[in-house]
Image (cartoon, rainbow, N blue to C red; front, side, top):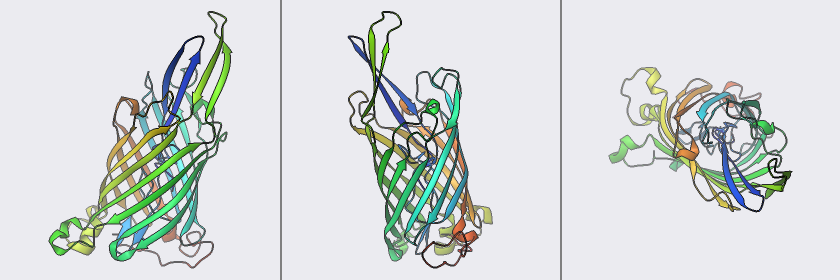
Length: 357
């Protein structure tokens, strides 16, 4: 349930200051899914959970995490994109995440991402591959209003330093991201706006706090023999975004049955926006916002969902072309409500056979 997006999309900022009597700066971006798109610095955050509030079903989304607290498994989540580095290179991410409810309102998720960087990526420009740092998200549902289809939750995502490969950008320190999540369906609108009732929005706001302010490496200039100092600053980052969804299951069950084939009645077209803005310790980074806009769709099956989205970078620093992300997501609380889908402390709930609205 972290950002894989939460965790799908995740972005890492690395800033270097070199001192040999003068200074310069460079910016490197690494984005992963998961666990992706999650959180972490972002969302590739792999984000992943689902929530039923009244007649409203909030599906697992890819660019940001949704407000749900449930038992679920996302495997695999696959994304491919060109990074915003100069020169740019292609990054391919494979992510997985498992979420488990401790109580009906509190869940813990664990996820990781395997990244493959094509040349000229990697520390030597020859490409690299390896795991990103492991991420854990603790999420608690604060409030749920079935009548107005509104839910909000709060959570803490921790990226555990030194659990991944430095060659693919995994940091050597922890990053802590307290996050607020919300979801709102428009099923409470009057009959005049019946066609808008299937619309729902979700959003998240998080604040990523690195466990280390900066990293300094001392060396010798090979040309002059002068001592050099390379300082990498780790800014605090505001991670924010939202989704706009139109639920065809909701349209059929709660508004009007258009007699469409079952395939279309299970679709949720949506647009996600997943962004990150450095807001503190930005000595060399500046405050440029980066991220992606992700149009796509989710298809809801019995106990699972399939999702595909485009990754459209908002600027050059976010990427150099349109990428793609896809995910297979299982609702464990539907597939095995009295076993692995049951809260550790609490009662089993009845499986939602469908409709998920």
